[in-house]
Image (cartoon, rainbow, N blue to C red; front, side, top):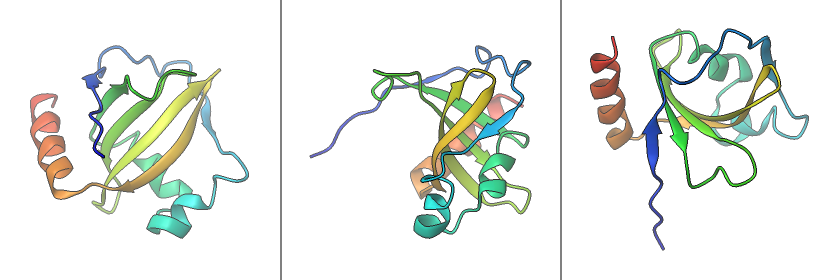
Length: 113
């Protein structure tokens, strides 16, 4: 069964001026490494490099969730799902972009640069 996720570009709506850093759940901190070989540090890098943010309407029933398409310092293109709790970014999951997502990222990143 397929589901459609409505992503709304929120690049200009997110205010990171009050963000103090990242928050990692003890059970979640190593999950991305075990599943996708993505370290916590690497997943945090997409927030400072060329990136595009989307609001994840479908998965925001309990708290607002966002998706960031971005690139690491080593050029790895990732998708990171996150929420903002108080003044910290809480990363929920991170994985490599698939080919369709890379095309979308490259198109959007070019438009927003």
